[in-house]
Length: 121
Image (cartoon, rainbow, N blue to C red):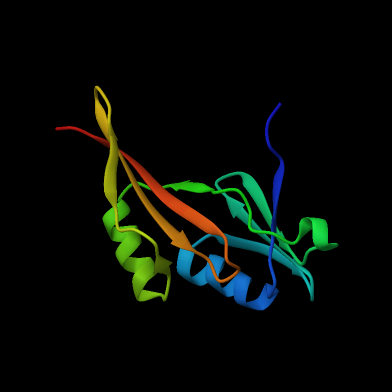
């Protein structure tokens, strides 16, 4: 079994679409105006939608977007207007690589993060 889609609450679909398409750099698949926008995150579909009631109106779990170069991705996203909570830093030295993380806020109040598993040379 694999994940087919993940739903995330959003308050402003146009703002959310612009952020994930233009700042994060995810492939925008399609929108269902005015309440949904869909993206491809390397084979996992993300659906950002207006909450369908108070019980669904809250920030999401943290998604960790795996990237090849966390510093370059961080710089590109900052230039695009992303608000980072923390800059890229090592959180766990592993036997053959270091795990780097940098958390950011999207325009909907959700905390998300970049991660890189950087091989040691």
